[in-house]
Image (cartoon, rainbow, N blue to C red; front, side, top):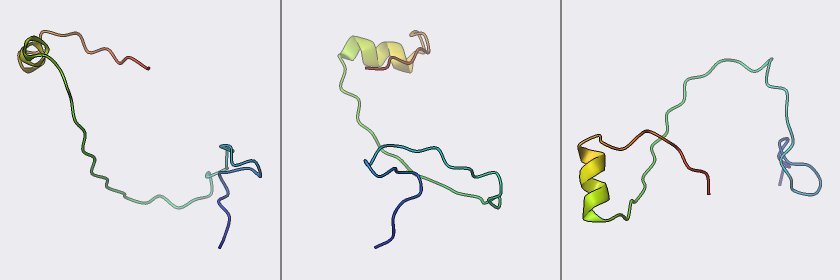
Amino acid sequence: MSTFSHLNAGGEANMVDVSEKAITVREATAEGYLYASADVLRQISEEKLPRVMYLL
């Protein structure tokens, strides 16, 4: 099995130089679930909540 160039020997993320890599087109599909109260869902659907990302 080959090793990943973006992981170091300890399995941690390692920066790699991709400046010489050819430009490609990629597409991805994601799915998620949101569990919230009816009030929060209503505010989202009515766009009454600020667009803020919280990192937990």
